[in-house]
Length: 425
Image (cartoon, rainbow, N blue to C red; front, side, top):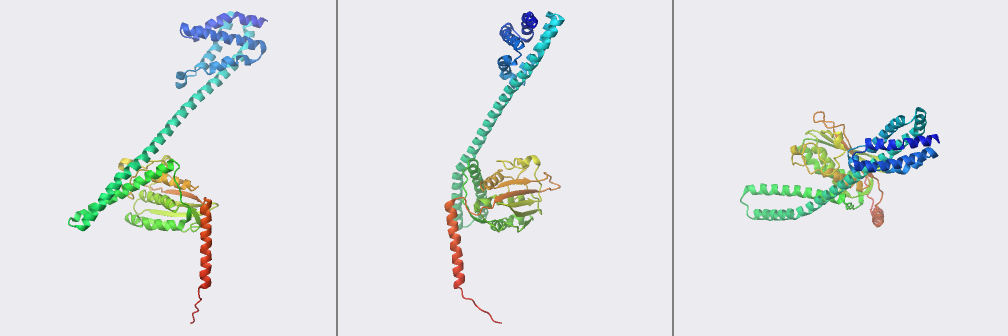
């Protein structure tokens, strides 16, 4: 009873003191005083019952009341008010009550106020986390829209460029035919060859842009058929022979377990992926450097490695080279040559390679100690391809099984009907 009377004694001075010091402006002070009245009534109920749940509704309202400005500026306004309220409560109690009454009141309400502070802090943090999450969601949505716009632009630009390129190619072919019929300008042949080289290069870039668009929109289709990795590497070795010779580089292709294993995949796309990686190695390896292709058979996978003795890739760049337009070095210093040292490009080869490998159910990653054009730490790309024993399409699998059975039967028939020639010495 004495405690309740003591709380009534400090009721008016408590509200007046706190509203005066913590609220600014008469209008704000009036509304704030009403909130303080509500809080004090709940505080008395809590003291009487010992149940802090009485304060939960108003603490919830206060904890979720920070304005947009408070949240954006990182201002913990409510926590500050609650903390200051506790200090002012102690002052008001000491000023308006005897020592015995003040001690009894503070002993009763200090734990309640301290618990209220922790509850308000928790609610305020929840509000702040929700605000930050909402901001992050907005940023992610904008990034998705930006990436979609970029993919759309690539797709539209690629298709729009194909039409004038076809026209240029057609007129160039007509000029070449006219030149063959009426030769007379010895420089014309070289000029036409230069134009054709440019057309070929531009068509390659446009094809890459279309491939990136297909990968971004999950429209890349694969034509699964039996594949030998060793066969792809042989084709690749023959194609890059000229480029390797021009750069005076060494190409080493090892035979490894799994290279002669018959798997199923898209031959053209896998060759494109390997081609991109090898030409990338040629480009970033100095003259007389070495490029090594090796691999091994793992449970369920074939691993292919393409290592070079080039300038390497910095740690931060290793995370972005598989993204669209992720290029190494300064783009303003790049040349336009496909195999020239540090030659430039649109930065689409590695993203396309990753898309192709992942479409096969595999994965790709890169290892390098860093970028150094003097020490030449080199780079190693790793590819994991699943050792699929048959196509994923059931009809295609049936066709291949029937073809293999027919080939076996034909081979047996030929062996049975082939006469054996005996030689004598």
